[in-house]
Image 1 (cartoon, rainbow, N blue to C red):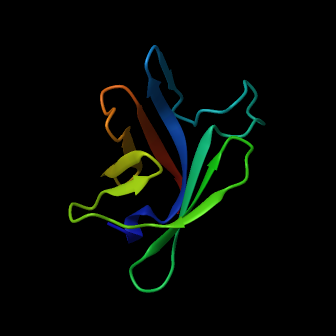
Image 2 (cartoon, rainbow, N blue to C red):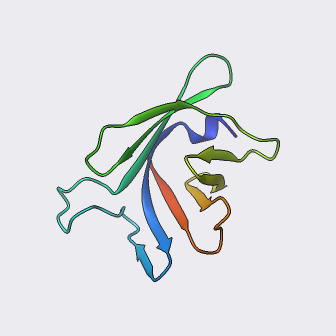
Image 3 (cartoon, rainbow, N blue to C red):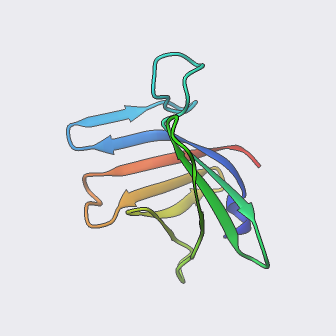
Amino acid sequence: MTRNLAGSWVITKSVTPGHSDSNSKGIRIGKSSADPYAWTLTFFPIAGDQLRMVSVEGDTAGVMSDLVFDQEGGLTLKDYRCRASTAANLVCLRSGHESEFGAEFSRVSH
């Protein structure tokens, strides 16, 4: 599971109460293809079988963190529980608000 996430991912679906946004090429913070993506994740291997992640929201500075996986292969990003639904898709639901807040990421590079 851990090595399968290595690479860059962009948010392609976002669901919040009263609003849903989707773009198979990635959701951007503006209308132009030159605008930054709303949320990107980059995973890269470190020692052993561990991964480190850089999370960037819009045009803000990235936040780096080492990842911890549960026994089922899921991981936690901020307040979200995430699981790879396929080799190219990562689905994240907000902990405690699973039916209200969700995000889906698609891999853009390995």
